[in-house]
Length: 335
Image (tube, rainbow, N blue to C red):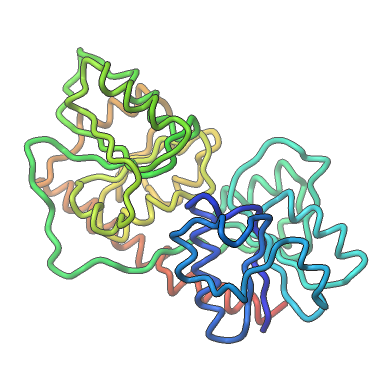
C-alpha cells in the first residue's frame, strides 16, 4: 500500500498536521508512504522533521513525476482536494478527502471525491448541509491520541481550580475574550493557563498584564511536552468559535480531566467529546462560560471524581490512537 498524505503546509504545529503524522508513522510499517506539501523540506516544523525521512517528502509539484494510479492520495485540505478532484479526471487515482473542520464559504468552488472521512459528526453534518455532499459518501473517524496516562497519577492540589486552555493563540480560540470579560462581581476562584503560540501571543501577554484580574491568568507560551503539562491541571477547556473536533479536549479525556467547552454555532463537534454533566460542562457564550467557571466542582468532591472517571471512559471508548489507526486501516483496505 503506497499512500501520499497531502496538506498545504507543515510549518505550523497544528491538530490536522499532527494527525497526518500519526497516520504517516503507522502506515510506514506496511509500505512506503509520503508527506506532500508546498513547503520546502527545511521549512517544515522541526517537531515533525525528526520523524520524516527526507526521501519520503514530496513537494506538491513532484506529483507529476509519479504514476499516480499506483497510489492512494489522502488530502487533508478542502482547497487541495478540489484541485485533485479535477486532476483525477485525467489520471484516475484513488483519492480520499479527510475533513478536519467546519466551513461556510466557497460552497460552489469546492469539489469532493466519493471517498470522504469526517473527523466528527458535526463535520459530516457541515459537508451534507452546506456543501450538499451525499451522506453515504462520508465515514466518521474520530481523531485519537496516544495513551500517555500513567497509573496512579494524581492531581496537583492548589487553592483554586487550575484550568488549562491549549491551542493556537488566535481569534478563533477566543483567549482574549476570556480575559477581557472577567467580572469583579463573580467568584473568580480559578486560574486559567493559556498554552500555545500564534498571531495574538503578544496581545495576550499585554492583556494579562493590564487586567485587574491578572492573578487569574497565566501564559505558558508553546509547550513541547503537553503530556507532562496536562496532569498539573484540574480541568481542560476550549472556547473556540469553530472546531472540527478539538484535540486538546481528547488529550484532557486521556488524562481523565473534566472538560469545559463551547459547543454551539461552529463548535458543535466539541459536544461529541465534552458531554454536559457526564464528563464536563458545555457552554454557549461568554456569560455561560463564567457561570460554569465560578461553580466548578472542587477536586475532592464526588462530582469531580465522577466527571474525571467519565472523561477517561470517553477516551477509551472513542478517542484512542489505536482505535483511530484501526479505523483508517480498515477504510484504506476497502477502497
